[in-house]
Length: 230
Image 1 (spheres, rainbow, N blue to C red):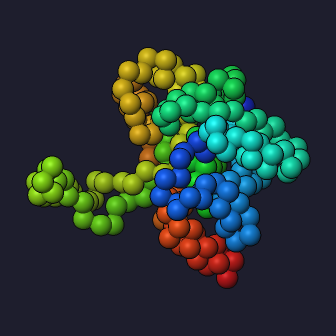
Image 2 (image 1 turned 90 degrees about the vertical axis):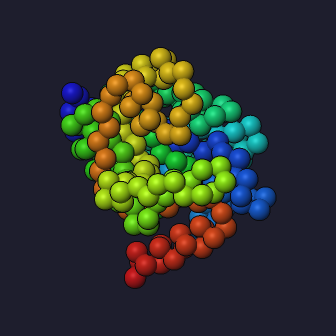
């Protein structure tokens, strides 16, 4: 296992979503406490001493605006930009190709603006055990399975359920290999490692590390930010 303290670490910020539930606003450009969501995400990675370089994956519609926004920051760390694919996993693969060889890669949702340096570094530490680690929080609500008619068929044991977030941290070579061999569609990168036979370590995320999906999420993120500063 490559020691993350001495390793080269890259990050991929996946921001190629369609923002379909944001009432016409691209969520990565939505203002959050006076700063676009995407810049809030990137700043944590810029400030994290363990991160060496980054790739931001955008879509065809937001590419020009996103690239201009990033270039304007004139950060010392390398931040490259590329266009993603139809599915999230296609966008991650595009980011991996542009990122190039490194020891570890951290995958982050471009719509999770409350990520912290601590969460990034905790993920790099947790990944030392199995080569893959995912931020997650215990489920607090009762979760039921339902059939197509919305009839509950099973209540799942809550004490073994975790809600996954990003950052997600992987050995770069293992993630590349898993995607090359992948035939299934997945909802996150940890799933592709699981399907390839790898083990994924869960580590404690944060309940305020929310993903911006609707305008209501922005209001909640504003509240969390104010609480952090108080």
